[in-house]
Length: 616
Image (cartoon, rainbow, N blue to C red; front, side):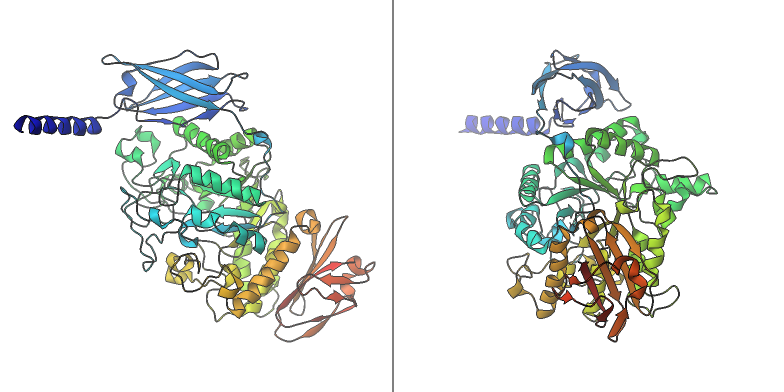
């Protein structure tokens, strides 16, 4: 008995010591790669205890070992490879030989690309992007609400705790998105965010190659995208390059001091994006803007470090290829090193010429947004290579336009004036337009706001120039006031949890008012799918008069007349000033009501309403 106990004790101690011992190679990232990429160069980050002491060799006809870079931390090396143009898919043996101990062989996989991968088509003006907050949309797999090693708990009563929404929940409702009429889904970040609290938002990433296990897995994410594509729905991935989470595995063993900005001392950014293009900006202000930390738990990444730069570029390409992405939305785009971001955009476009990237350009004026768009004629010569930028100035105007009395520069004139600034953009059709999102108070803050206000805004959003984005829940009047905090504008979608009393995913679970706006938006969205004048037509607008803003979208195939009436009384619109578009038209169909408009000379307008007339 005693001998058995000693034997069991020794066995247990051996198992514990083995589990605590660090492997010679803990990580290699990217975890795999593909043959046939336009850029044949590949740099592997290898992490392991004293890995810098190892000699590395590769004997394979598919790949050349160009060199090994050893850095200040001996637990990291960077292996520089060239994948040959005629390389075949298969396993590559990377041999690590140490001064002491046995050599190690690591099997690294080169995969075959999907047919047509390089020519994938991103999202464009024919699409409407629906923004989904994964943690707040639907809980499809309650068994992963709590995962061992992840401390942030699920508590739906706490606005800033995790609520349990996941990728399976989104996948389960693909038919809902299709019925609504949206054609692309943008998910807030889904990568691991193993922070002790407030991890639900996903913007403090702790592993750039792993989906957070409380949301699902890499495999499930890829399955979700495959099934979305089968429904004709594209998927946009939210990426973050400006910072990582304070609990990222890098922070436990930093590769090099220059991996982060202002490390190890924390200093917050001044959030003053204009200092990046202001010709009079001081170095102190512009450097703090770019290098300061976004928050105390979000270390600022230094994209000027060449190893980190390669890491981030390869990470983007890896996710596009692995998951089958259609687009990327880049968080806090101007906070990163702007020259690196131009290089990153170029590198992604080099591999995927038809891919779409939109950058979050949260600034107040059109000229400030225009600075970040590709081919802008900037005074400093900077070219971002970023084709799609977010039109925050139009969003700000929308939040005021439908609440004010009409004046020289108030009410609908606000929309007109922002659109009139399109001369500053290299391509105003490549503007990402929206009424609200996860960082801004919802357009419909509460139930006291008139439904006509939201209808006007949605009719405008879905017919003006640019690529529209809708925030989840807008179609069911989900309220949210930013004055009450971000938790209030990121509420759970009713019916996304088995315990919810009603489900807004079905007409039966929605109120009469909710169904009214849902049907209104769905009608426009599904019509929009084939409305070529909206996709690629020219926009011609007329100065708002008498509480009415009229514009036309037109190409050789179709002419659409949009009328926004912001007045509270019915009126008859005399259309004589629009003769340049109406002189050869005899009638039209209002696609919202389905009614035929027989008399184009005098059009009856209801209070606080929109008409979208397809002219005949």
